[in-house]
Image 1 (cartoon, rainbow, N blue to C red):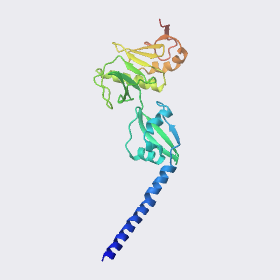
Image 2: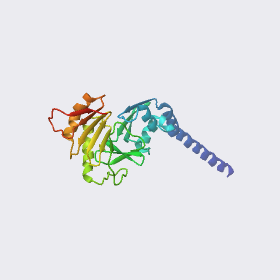
Image 3: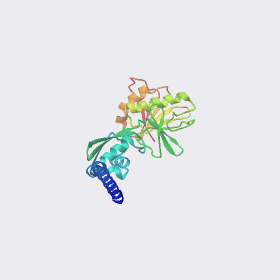
Image 4: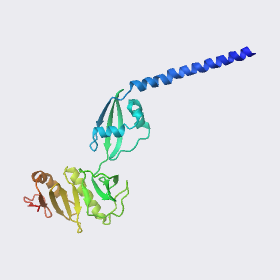
Length: 248
């Protein structure tokens, strides 16, 4: 009886050992090979303009396991990843076992306002899509208006609702014509003044500014480097002359 129990014990031990060996062969060894051979050596970044390629790599490849192409791909495909300011989405493409391509999809931002010492960025529909302590030079800065409330991922609310459409009209046109406008300023009479470096542009008060902004596409390159005030309050399409005077 004792010999029979020892035999069963030995058989059970051998069976367990075989299972362990099979597990090593099927899972552990391939996983080890995968980890060793799929080391991340090359990163290609596409689509980013707000951050440099190096900055994006540091933000995307943030864990030790990310130095493996497969694990990095799986994390961004199925895992939880931290959000990156001004970035809507990140897509990781496996180029080969040692190379990945990072596709960056940035948030579409048309303007920003200052709020409680920081900056709130909104899109073409007036939805606040980002908050930051950083002010982006390439995004028009809106000043001179008060807002009822500012909540991230919600639409801006201002006391005079019609002014909301004016802001969006201006920011969309500035983006459409690729103008280098630093600031959109409203005065107490809701007249608009634009600033582009040392150039001050008086637009006055209108419902839309399509004609004036379209003309600025031609005017600003000619005035670049000068300290001028361009008076376009009474500008109409086809007008030959625009008042330009040096700033004091």
